[in-house]
Image 1: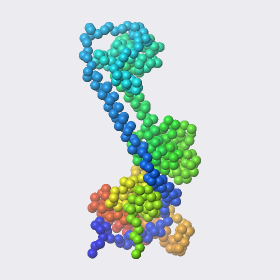
Image 2: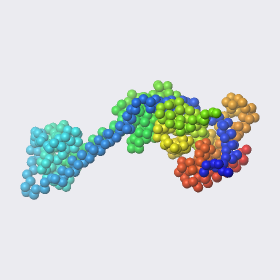
Image 3: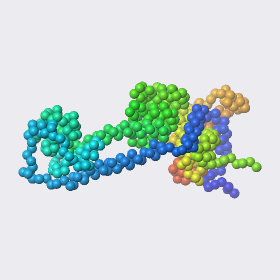
Image 4: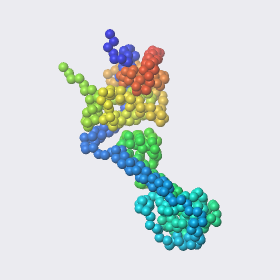
Length: 305
Length: 190
């Protein structure tokens, strides 16, 4: 009668031979590995007995939700007004363009007109500038068109770049005329002259600049917490060698905190084992300072010097 | 009447509730099996040591996610295999002379570690281990992996198939070929 469960084949002499050879096999994991694993497990168990703390991963959905909501509002404020702008008046009804010299003078002295509340809020938050109510709908975005739009709103540059308002106004006035050389627009100056497009570009640039350190910091936070699952997730989209404000990589933070698992995770993702912080502290130096022989060996195996 | 040893699943449950001692028992119970599975697959002690840490770190971290009703060893070896494949993809597997069985410790060392056996037995052990390692090294990767899962994890064909994401029939064939070939190779090396 077959008493073995389905899929289980009966043992034969091969199993016996394998078992005997394995029992006498002197190969075994290092004592350091055993110590490291058990110490790590003990730390986790101690954490489970203590009151649960919010892990960075669990807390991570707040910024994501807030960011998504903010992006939605920003998009709505950028897109919706374009559908409610008044029609373009005939060319004959448009006010005549100011002379370049007048424009320069206006740009230097004119105060910013009152804006609707949402635009003020966004400007205060460093976001893009909302077009003024009643402005003509968007003409083709040729450089002269941008110049005309600015001509109607000479304060636009001063609000976006206050430092460029008065002293630069005279120099830039020639850019506001149709007679300005076309290659003048290669410079980023005309792009900064206001309008929705320029504002969106600025916002995108600022977001990109701000997102970089935040990504780095998130990595460092996950490394400090020893949260390998969070690290795995973040490393799908982030640079493993991103630095925080102190110039520390996530690997260095993990070593400093003695987070063996995070160290292994980061090294497996190709973290640079020799990346020093601003003070010149390398992961290997940090591991040596901690007296962590296993971590030293791990780092050396991955090329740390 | 003696008490049956506590099951792996119960130990893991105790650890998930914060008992570090339960993890230690579990680790010592399965340490050598996982080690042999990793070392004989990757063929390098340093990499196997590193993988051991990764596997057991994952067990400790995910203990609370273990599904009741599952078998611990199947879960454990699934983690081990997953980590091993990641290492192989990352290029950490280093097939070396060690993998081919040429690194067996000297007889004197074996006598030190196993004082109960005599010199002749020590030589036989060394030969036997070398033959086994060489024979395993000659198996195709998929067959060696499936066979080691079965031998070290004591897993059923279904469990091996689930872990390797292969069909039952494919797994059964792999195991049959692997066992036949290993028997032949060991016969040649003997």
